[in-house]
Amino acid sequence: MGSMNVGTPVAFLFLVLIGAVFIAPGSSLAKDYGTHGPVWEIAEPNLLEVIQARLTAMEDSGELEDMRDEMQETTRAYVNRPRPVLGLLPAEHARTYEVDLSITLERDLMDHRGQVFARAGTRINPLDYSHYNQRIVVFDGDDPDQVAFALSEGNELDTLLVLTKGAPLELMRAHGRRFYFDQDAQFTARFQITRLPSVITRGNRVMVVEEVPVGDAR
Image 1 (cartoon, one colour):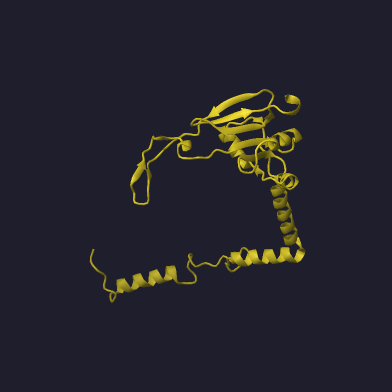
Image 2: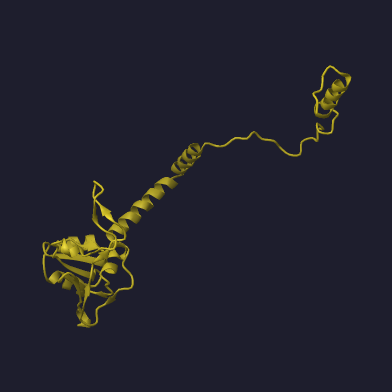
């Protein structure tokens, strides 16, 4: 299709028609339909300002101080009495079993120079590389018989006292010994402990767990 010379009457008429459609106030596309609702300027609040305003309001009302006090009390309560390990029962019969701590590597292990020193699939027993030989007593700190049993043998150097329930700081003040707590049941799960008290000692490449009835269960 050839170019149009704007100087020709046909071209001039074409421009007039275009202007009438898009510019003329009487055209259908430029018709004013009025306002159908309130119009606001689009504005996005600053998130930090919103947070700061909320904190200021909470501080003025005393709500923030109440939250601080509640958090401190919750933390203090948890330290004094951590969440107990559920599902553990008192030992009713003497029972001994072994736990193999060996693991199988899922990937190659490399040193800082990139040299592989252990291949994936290798089975490793940590007791082959450890001289750990402490006796471990796992028990319920709210049971006086179990507490007495845990304290009956050993000392700080050769016996580790691990609670599954109770108040470690209170026991520490009462007996002058360190008490540890099995948080999130990681310890009891690893040693497959279901009965208390249980005594863990080192065997020949395995750990030996002994369930010991105490109190009325003896």
